[in-house]
Length: 289
Image 1 (cartoon, rainbow, N blue to C red):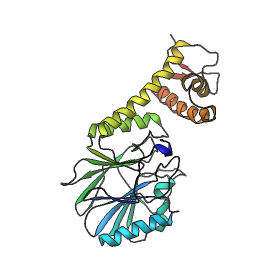
Image 2: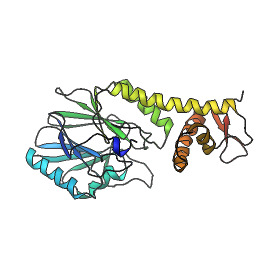
Image 3: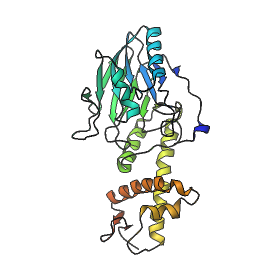
Image 4: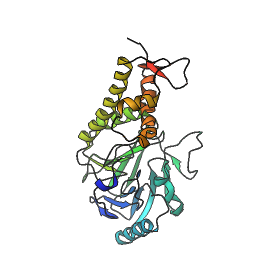
């Protein structure tokens, strides 16, 4: 994520194209940046709302109601990109007349709503002027989806949820799945990205390549430590932090260790790193040199 002082300004209401209106969630913070971007899509009397904010900010509800009155439109359906509260909390304020869709967390206690109909990969949603195709992109969360906008006036735009941010880099539950999802998005070669946090991304291919390269560089640093050093019991995530994050303040080391743990989990899945048999937290090269 980016620091608050370096963030670009985002108005509460923005018409981004003839088909897309952004409504800022009015919930700025370390993890949400300027706030959570929600989007009204379409140009007829019925629109699709992508995400709902956290449900705690009256100014967001007022802004959404204002733009719907001005547009003389209602919400036909709500699509939730994933389960995090700043994306689904506002669902409690939504009326019963609109349908809700979300990719399910099957058998998971983190599933947030029984109201939502399940999204399937490549499912389409249509309103006047626009069709959205949902692509399952796990990694940030297991239930994450991005939405591809197909329309004559705005082709090949993508609503990226938290998979790709307008500013800074993202966080993830599973780096292995996350990297696969980035590759899947890259193959679509979107011309424009509307992220759930931060400003609109006009050069998506470059941004995605940066995300992928950034993670690969960290991965190579971890592998270099394992290749250059030996340690009884292997290296713990915090050991890597002390060697790699040399300019990072110590108070942030625990957060950095969580990031390293995700990289290690990915490398284990790929068979490049293994856990030390007699150590709970130690890792070593799968084929030590």
